[in-house]
Image (cartoon, rainbow, N blue to C red; front, side):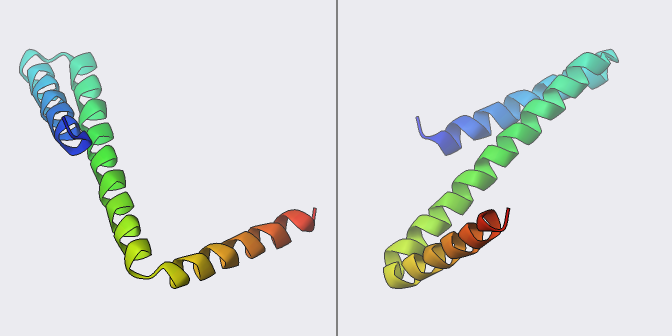
Length: 82
């Protein structure tokens, strides 16, 4: 199963657990369900961002290398100051 599908299933499970907590006035279930739901949404956002980066690097490899070199230089300068 793909990671996106797993994240969607986890999000639905979290929403169901949160709703169960609301119906039974169990704040523990509400909090756990909300945490599970938001973690799954975060996982989906990370997967989407990784897909965009992968696509951009594939389309513009020279630009990607230049950006990575610039970040490396910047981090090197910041670390070297200490």
